[in-house]
Amino acid sequence: MVKASPAGRSTAPIFSLGAVLRGVLVSFLTYLVLALVVATLIYFWGDLELQLASLTYGAGLVAALSGGFVAGRQAGHTGWLHGLAGGALFIVLSYYIAVFLWPVPAAAGIFGRRLLLGAALGLAGGAVGANL
Image 1 (cartoon, rainbow, N blue to C red):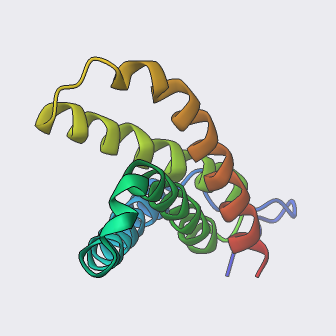
Image 2 (tube, rainbow, N blue to C red; image 1 turned 30 degrees about the vertical axis):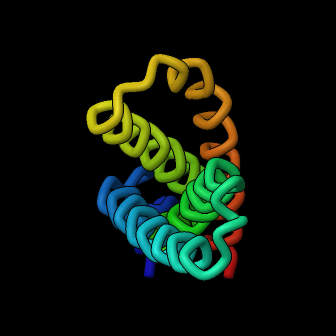
């Protein structure tokens, strides 16, 4: 519950780093689960291996959306801001982890588009999460 000051204003902080970090953690856990599902599907249906890039891209976007939802839900207010930060931070961290583990020069060209889309989905998830 948010406390009100004598002047009627909220005394809650505008930005909660803890809510964003919880959202990013949920994003990584969601991505891990979705990666296991994709790996299992590819194991049983080998033809899906041709769609691996699209499946992992979609899993990353779903993870950004879910992390934004949790960040917005945890914050309770300004959920859109927390979701935006959570989605963007997840995309940035996952990008740098991927570049560190698998250095691919072509990955730099798609970073901006993924960051924009991940931040937008995080924003949407945060707005929904704060209002549920």
